[in-house]
Image (cartoon, rainbow, N blue to C red; front, side, top):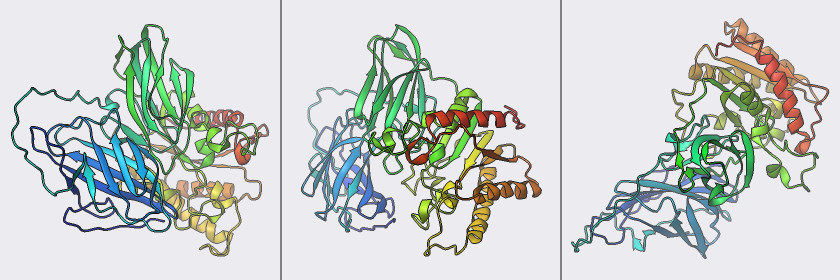
Length: 496
């Protein structure tokens, strides 16, 4: 459930879901002082919400900052945060800069955020202070002081200038944020070690050097994770997000060379591009598990690796860049068990960060996948309809699914052009054949309407063990499914 907040004060506190900014004065230096702060409630659900704060320095350069504010309700709490060192005492919240975003040049900005909890009320904070100075609504010009020399802040390294990635990321310059599973960053470094700058208390990552996995980083928090004792030569390094985190963005601040080394030019993007769209099967939900009950072996997150999903394996085998845009439990028009009525996968597909509905992904001209594989329907049809759902019969659900699917293909056509091949996939459901037959009919109808570059792919194999969490495909199964998909792709008229 999303709720919008609006607030009007003399300092004009701003919300992404409303409007305005907070003007805050900074501590005295020899230059004009001031900044603007935008506090945003980006998403809200019963008992919790996501908050974001954007800070822009309007005055002279600063080397560090601390933002403070008070929640109006005693039930509002910061559960976990990113891009700052968050703490809370009573209702008083403090966010101090991270090691990499303390320096803000004039007109430079940084964004921080948090996941919060509430007990039913979530009013907006009304007073903000930066470095102890309460908002004044203006930029201050302090009295001149004797010059003792100035030191310019170090140049900001733009992360996307040093890495290759095809994933959906929010570009903040010196950092990028992301939520979709399987997002990866590839760079090159010379020297005996490489540091990986992360700020993420939610996700797990694989680290690969020269094509071999050298580490798994579990919910690293704010850190620079080092891989040392490399040979003193050129290396490729790859960081890949294993897990789903729809409501909490991970943050990557780039690669850092060990002393005496250097960051090299980023790898060249691959000419082949594939987009995988789907649900838990596509995301690699619980695929590392060897037992269907994951309550005793670490849970779903600890047993999931999107880099070992069938889509990632297929892309690797074809030397293709790829996206995995998948959300467990979501369907084309209906979610698992009829959950979250009024939303479905299409609600979130256009977003950069899944929880932020005001930030659609600006599709870059460099992302034009020749192949799009869509796997949505397991959650639409695998569970029985509930009495309170908008479809009284399965036939009504099928009709809505067909209409929505055709509209979704229209969106993909508009985005990626008429030459892209779109694959509508389906798989075995133990309780019904409706998913497969409906998906096949969608393709027949599309072809009959003149779109010949839409294909139907059904996958199943007697060797699938479905030993992943909650009867999902295991890593063993993902290898089989990837092989089936590779065989199918070989039959398609791809020109790449």
